[in-house]
Image 1 (cartoon, protein in one colour):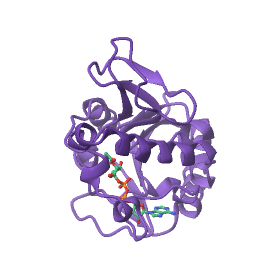
Image 2 (cartoon, protein in one colour):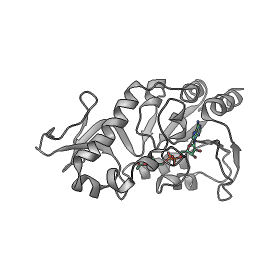
Image 3 (tube, helix red, strand yellow):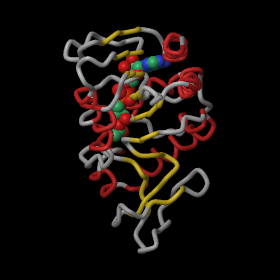
Image 4 (cartoon, rainbow, N blue to C red):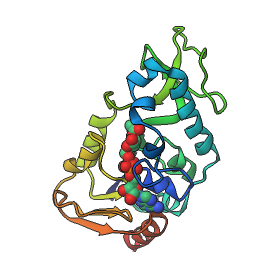
Length: 229
Ligand code: OAD
């Protein structure tokens, strides 16, 4: 029999209990840094060293981070469901946990790419990406991250995946950043949806939504237990 499909949409909140900072909470990254200084194409042109250093710090933290009970519980769902993770996160905690199908909407911290040819993508050697490290076409390597103002190449594919969900789970995202936040609009109305986020505010525009205002490390294992019953 064909397995039911669960699509899981994750944001920075799922990695918070693994020690990685979120963006918009108090103490979040966008309190410490200005988006326009480190996460836009203009910032890269203006001060590439500063941009590289920002992502080198993210990479150093991500390397040491371990998946928490939320990442691990999602892997358990694969015993009876076809599970597709769609993450806005650039860390590799879903991979470390062992999830099989993972789509990164905003890029991956452990990869870099050519600054003149988006198809030339490489693993970052070591933890730091430095000025002078070049692609095979001799242009500077940049972080493999989707910056503000850039096209989100995986969005259309993600929307198609969301439209085929039998169950949709949202974890730890403020749903503030578009087009990623628009993913939920592609999920059919009748599909049951779950949101796990301590600050999950009512989302009247999302039909059939069950909100659990708990931390991911507690709320996700609970939900997974129920879905495996
Ligand atoms: P945000 O920082 O906007 O939101 C984090 C969410 O996680 C908030 O709703 C928190 O309430 C929630 N949260 C905090 N701790 C949690 C926990 N322990 N368990 C569950 N939830 C928790 O992060 P995102 O929504 O992921 O993009 O941000 C979206 C995008 O904006 C990011 O991918 C990044 C950022 O700027 C780019 O850099 C392009």
